[in-house]
Image (cartoon, rainbow, N blue to C red; front, side, top):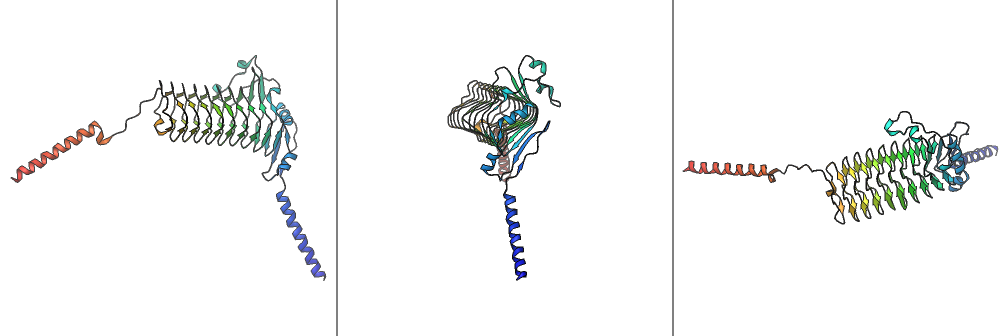
Length: 360
């Protein structure tokens, strides 16, 4: 009897241990080391956390802005952010050139003298999260400068994002973001790379007069509403392959210094490339223009492949400057080929005539 009792007790303890292990493995794992002076603000929730658990561990926008004001880095992943992130509230500071960056990508402090400059000194990461508030910088005269990298990949913004007049000294990652409202980067300065692969932009996106010093990769992105890339400068490679533009799209007045690809992109409404300068190779192979496509006054400094795109309406090419295409060797259809064929036939006829005379 004692023997069976001990066995039952052992089995019960084993089952309890198994259930406990399963509960532990299913628990919401939270990484939130203690903060302090100079330490980053960190909170990372595992993918297995429930919506209720994420609400419990929500991060306030006040805590984020206070950390940025102290010069701390912010590392958030899988969290819910509550409240507006208003960068106008940051104190005015003196901008410094970032070490290791080319001088042409920097703006010396003396050029910013007399202007308001709000600095975000630490890296800012809010990835795979949900931001339940606006993110804005609306100073009409000032400049918002991010000294470190900015990483928002996989995050959903339920309200508007307006970082106009912002200068990004590090890389910017918007891959997989969902922007449900308007998104403005008017006069934005991107010193390093911008990644917006598979991003979903909302009803209105503006990059008017932005400057991209590094490469841009928006492969597979969706611009659901109006997309404005007016008077934008792309210094390095720009990839818009398989992008879908759901509404009116404008690149008028922009300049592509290197290769640009719109391979298999879909332009659902009217599209404007007026006065655009394509200094590098421009690929439109497989692109679909479902509305009007206006390339008036554009300049292609290298041969284009517009013939490989599909236009539902004839493309407007008024005063468009296009590089001369290299004529491929047409073989027998070329003048040289025709001449060689004629000579060959005459020679063959002469040989046949000589053979016939010899037989006689």
